[in-house]
Amino acid sequence: MFAPCVVGGDAAPILNNDFLRSLNASLSDHISLDVLEDKVKRSKRRLLNLLSKVGGWHSWSSLSSLNIIAVLFSSWIAEGYAMGVERLVVVSKGHAAPSVYSWLVEMGVIKESELEDFATPWSRLQSHLDALRLPGIVVYSTGSLGQGLSIANGIAIASKIDSIRREVAVLLGDGELDEGQVWEAIATASALKLDNVIAIIDRNMVQHTGFTEKVKPKEPLAAKFNSFGWYVLEVINNVKTIHSGLRTLSSINGKPKALIVRSNRRW
Amino acid sequence: MVIIVYSGSFRKAFGEALVEAGYLNEDIIVLDADTPKSTWTKLFANTFPHRFINVGISEQDLVSTAAGLAIAGKIPVVAGFSMFLMRGWEQIRNTISRDHLNVKIVGTHSGLSDYMDGASHQCFEDIALMRVLPGFIVLVPGDEIATRKIVLEALLEHKGPVYIRLGRDNAPKIYDEFEEFPIGKLKIIEDPGDIVLFSNGFTLGLALEVANELKRHGISTGVADVYTVKPLDKDGIIKLSKKVNLVVAIEDHSIYGGLGSAIAEVLSESYPKRILRIGIRDEFGVSARSFSQLIEYLGFTPANIALKIIEVYA
Image 1 (cartoon, each protein chain N blue to C red):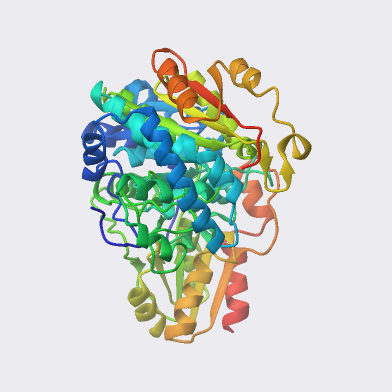
Image 2 (cartoon, each protein chain N blue to C red):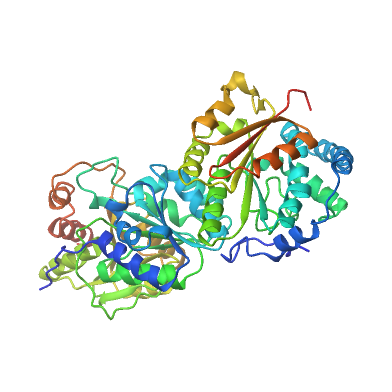
C-alpha cells in the first residue's frame, strides 16, 4: 500500500498520491460513532503499550490526540468523500506520531507488528511523522513545531486557485501555540478568507514543562482566535463531541475555523 | 582594457524573468512578505494578481506557505531580502529541504548591494546557510542576462528546491543574450595564466577589473564565473587550479562558508593548492550613501584587491 522506505524525495507533489485517493475511497463506508469509540479504546491500549516501550515518549500528547485523530481519519475524511470533498489531515504536533501509528493499525493501513520497529533507523515509523516514508498519509515531515498551519494555508490556497473542493484540518498542540509563526499563519488564513482550513487545537492543558497556564498562559484562547477573524467552537475531548463539532464547522463559510478540544483529566 | 559598467539591476531582471516564466507555466505562484516593490515581484503581481500572495511581514509563514503550495503541486517562488528570508531558514531546512519540495527561493539585496540599509540588511551569510541543506541548488548570477537565464532555468526546467542569490541594482554588464547557464557548470570568461580568480554575483564584474589591474602589473590572470555554488563544478575548479600558481576567490559574502570556502573544500580534498579568499572577514556591514562609497570604505576596489593578491603572490 505504501511506497518503500525512501530518503530524499523527487520533488513530486506530495498530494499527487494515489494513496490519498484510495484512502478517501476506502473509508467511504461510515462507521457508527459507538463502534468508533470501541476502536479508540482498543487503540489506546495499543498506544500505551507502544509508549511503554519508548519510556513514555511524549505520552500525554499522544493520548490526548487519539480521539481527534480517530475522528479525523475514520469519520471526517469519509464524510467529506461522500460530499465530494477531498479532506486532508495535517498533523502539526508531530510528536503525536505514536497516536497516528496506533490508529493506522486500527484502520488496517499498517500491521500491528510494525509498531515493534517504531523509532528505529530502518522503520518508516519515525519518532516524528515523516512524509517521505509515509507518503499520502503524512502531508509534510514534522518534528519542528508551529509550521503546520502555514503549510495547510498553502495547500488551501492552491486548492482555491485550482477550484478543487478540498478541506485541510490541522492538528495543533496548545503548547505549540507559543510559536509566533502560528499567529502569523492565523492572520494569513483570516486575511485570505481560507474557509477550507480547520485548525484543531488539542487543548490538553500541558506542555513540556507542565501546566500550560503556568508556563505561558494560552487563555482566553477562543477570544484570541475570534479577534483574528476566525470562527471558533469549543468542545470537550471525546469522539462524539469532536465529531459533532467538525460537522457544525463544515457548514461555516467565508472564514477559517478553529475547534478547541478541551480535556482536563489526566491521560 | 576592460571597462565594467554597473548599470544593470538584478532585481529588475528577476521581476521581468518572473513574468516571462509566469506566461510559460501557470503553476508558478509568487509569494512575498510585503516587499514586492523592492524585489520587483510587483511586475508579476500586476500581471497575474491571482497567482501572487503577499503574506505580510512574516517570513516564517512565507516560507511554510510556499511549502504547502508545493505539496499541492504548484511551483512557488518565494522572494524577499536574502537577509530576512534567512529568518525562515529552519522552516526551509525542516520542510522544503527535508521533503525535497519544488520551492524556488530568491533572495534579493544580498551582500553589499543594499548599501544604504547597513549592517542589519547586508547579508553575508546566506550562501553558507543554504549550501549545507541537502538537495538544494544554490545559484548566484553575475549580471542581468545571467539572472534572467538562471531564473528561467531554475523555475521552468529544474525540479526541486533552489536558492538564487541576487543583488539589488549595480549589476555589471558582462554577457550577451546568447550565453547559456547550465546548472552545475562554471564559465571561463578569461583563460587563466599565473592566477585564476573565481567569483560570482556582482563581484564577477569586480574580478574582471581586478584581472585587468593584475595584467598591468605583468601577472596574467584568468576569471571564472562560478554561478553554481552547489553543486559545485569540481572538475572545472580542479582543472583551472592546476594551470595556475595561485587561486583566488572574490565574493561579497563571509569568507566562512561562501564560495571561497566551497572551493577550498574541493582543493584541499582533491588537489591541495594555496587559495586566497577575498570577502567579508568576520564582520558586519555599514550604511553608505552610495554603492561606490561602501565599496571604497570596505576596500572592495579593484586596485585594493589587486594589491592584496600581489602581496600574497609575490
